Length: 405
Length: 106
Ligand SMILES: Cc1cc2nc3c(=O)[nH]c(=O)nc-3n(C[C@H](O)[C@H](O)[C@H](O)COP(=O)(O)OP(=O)(O)OC[C@H]3O[C@@H](n4cnc5c(N)ncnc54)[C@H](O)[C@@H]3O)c2cc1C
Ligand code: FES
Image (cartoon, rainbow over the protein chains, first blue to last red):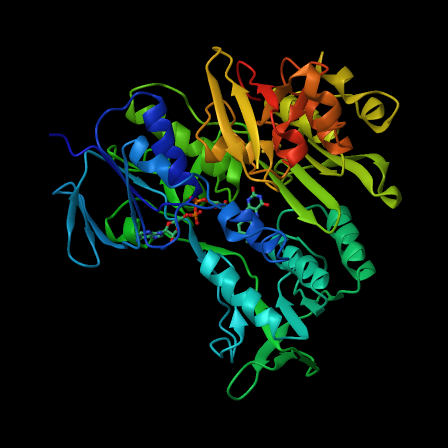
């Protein structure tokens, strides 16, 4: 019997790869190993509908329980892999069990970054990556009146919106001079900052946190300038550290992520990496990128499955992402780094607009706020490396469809 | 609870009971009806949960939401009865609903 494919990490990417293998008719064993107890689930609602209690846990599962047996996917929840033995072509669980593979897929995601702040280990200090984290945070919020969030990235801001819906007082502290500074344009970040302030969030930018205070449990934070902010609960929302440990220990090439090619292959041709943990060369952007999005997890999972099945389907995506905050839907297509020109369509004051970003006249990204046509059209234009006319783009009387012909 | 019939592009029919409060998209995912990808999990952000509502049921499923409308505008093979199934909430009034699936999503 063949050992088949072993997938480490039963998240969005790992499941996508397993599903795609079966859809392609792969008939060797598929083993999907994850250290969480929950079956594969969606993370996006953890900061949104699940945290605001509009969505129960059983609506997070990506597949019904019966799926796994039916598709002959051996789902092994609650099992953690301790190391990879490349020479013996097997992985070893923390319990010492050996699981052999012909192909191995690393879909280990990553860990929420904990900041090296005094007090960061106090009870009452939370991070948010997993369902267990969301449950802990949600329970804590039920007992709390105030929440301080360190970091105004997407997760920090989404939690702020959900906590406001639950009636908490919310302070968001951001070291940069605007929200979402790593991934969004200044105009968009500023607009979201104003949105949150309008909903009563105390958003403080250019604000460094010196420590989390409290003797037995967190009771607030102290800022660099000495000011103290009281909070019953503190959330550190400072991004993700990719889960490269297994790969590094096994000697696979890593650099802020596991390095893979367009077929999701690592430096060991029988070993693949996908999802948040994988860094690959984007032909579209001409540089190496690591994406943290559902789109990337799903599609790179499919690319690895294609490669294992001997198909040639190079992965060169137009990255896309969404975020829901209050009644606002943000959709971003492409990546804005390197843009040299921005074109605005629609009026930010009216709550629906899009920002198009160009580099050398080529459209490379679009940030769409309640503007789905702009987002959908931009995905195709970016893929085609198109050069839409900025003056027409700015003109809202020209329908987005017109740019696609 | 509502009985919903999903008809694949190939003609294969799936008749399933879907709990009130879920969406028509979730009814398909939970019952392993193939042909709906639902990449964004119902956030109305991906347009990979496209269905055609049986014309007799269009009154009861109601009109498209505005965000849904513009997402659909860019899906392939869109018709008058096209909907994003994650935006149709299941209720008793939809007992007997028939939806057809497109040849492909996206
Ligand atoms: C709160 C939150 C909100 C988000 N919102 C959005 C959004 O709106 N839109 C969007 O596009 N994306 C969003 N994302 C990002 C998206 O969820 C991720 O990009 C996606 O889940 C990545 O999938 P993955 O499979 O690579 O990693 P994960 O889903 O993290 O899966 C990795 C799994 O591997 C397990 N694992 C790790 N190491 C081991 C080991 N040694 N042994 C066994 N198991 C192991 C982990 O426990 C985990 O279960 C959000 C993420 C979070 C946390
Ligand atoms: S599931 Fe993504 S739009 Fe319906």
